Length: 601
Image (cartoon, rainbow, N blue to C red; front, side, top):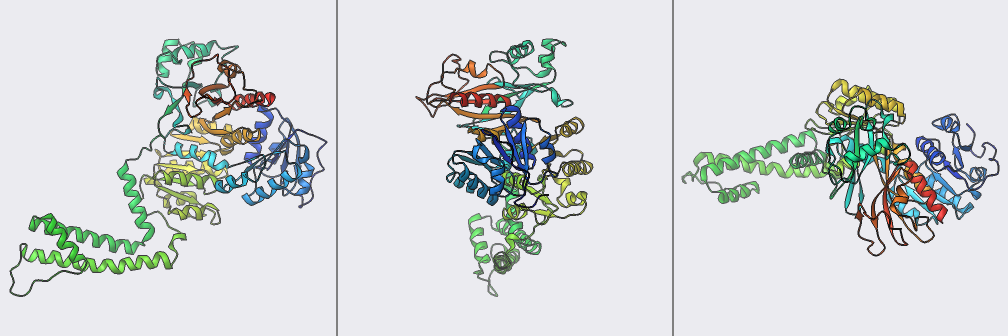
């Protein structure tokens, strides 16, 4: 490893290139995006040529140079010719380091396009104001919804206006779908999937597909379509996927009463210890039984409630010797005594809770999942992605338990601040999963930074619970294909694969609204404005979709900018200044559109 301030010699004179700073998985995917889909010269600045993804980055065809510096210093920026570059992306290091490096790059080249990865999105939004031409993105925030939704067997969605776009498969496809986005879906061979296949050239098979599932065709299941097309129809082999809209975010499939019960129990566990909970629950049960007895003896709910509340407050008036036994006799007296003593118990218990929370700082201390934890999601790995996944699940009202082997992991404190129980242990993974109450869980999401660890977590979970749903974070595509082929009720996602297209588009000055997964493939949803000088001016829907890899989903006209016109029917109308189009695109399709826009500018 080189020491700070020393690196490889500066690259050969180069200009109009793009710089990627980092040696992690996201840097690797981003370099691939820029080289393969945008066909631009790329220089990569890595902290160590022998570690992480740096060796694989060096093997990429099209990368102009790989430069090694332990940190992004002034000398390192000069070595990668930042003064002549068109754009630079900082996708490694912490938020503070990336902010400092971004401002340094802007000082060397005021016109350069800057994209930096930041975990703190609020800080990132403020930093964008300091950059003349920059954007701050969170790779974990981009990818986390896909992991959370996969754990819940819920369609991942992207919001556009007042609608939510999501992917539907086979029999779930409705007649009001926007378009077919993939065919030839085969879990045994994911490489056969065609994402937004081209409609020109060798398009006969897709024409047959369109006749079955096109805008005017009937909806049939994949099996019915294959039978209708004949066994020789290659296009309909396997399943299909379509893009659909919903008026609201897809609902979480957990009954409201279960979520309410979990919230109440979780809040009780957060503010109380085991002993206090036993006292509270016992006293509450005794009060409820005594209240029921009073009601039974008197038959008057209002009077019973009045008496019970006075007894709880210690304001009961005891019967005097010689007085009648009252309407309920001796049993009424017993019930009132029970309520009064339980009321006396509640006051010191409330004081103990206040002392425990405020004085002992319980909020930041470890909390293991309780015996009542049910129907929850176990998240293995509390790095950036794991923390985002936990936050999203918790926000949806889904019970969740974190699991982390490194006690210094940055996400532990953030997850505990939400009141989510965390198992912190570096022992055998099977034991950790047992402590996380795997046998009562609904899914396991393994999102550590190591593929082998994630696979181990999935296999250990299946050994204990053969029916549990598993979601894995895997970088290697062939590794993921084997997982899909051998494991049922499983899903695989790659954080870098989901985030890299958005970073590449941002580096080109375009904003991606979101990404949708079709197994290991990525569909990008973007809105492109037709600005003066833009290459979009004068193009129509047919022009945009002609080269393949792009589908126009909606149009916003300059005269009605708040109205999204879905399935815009006029394919011949040319875009005018002020219009904008919402497209679904492959990575290559969006790259071609960005090239068109750049040529027009």
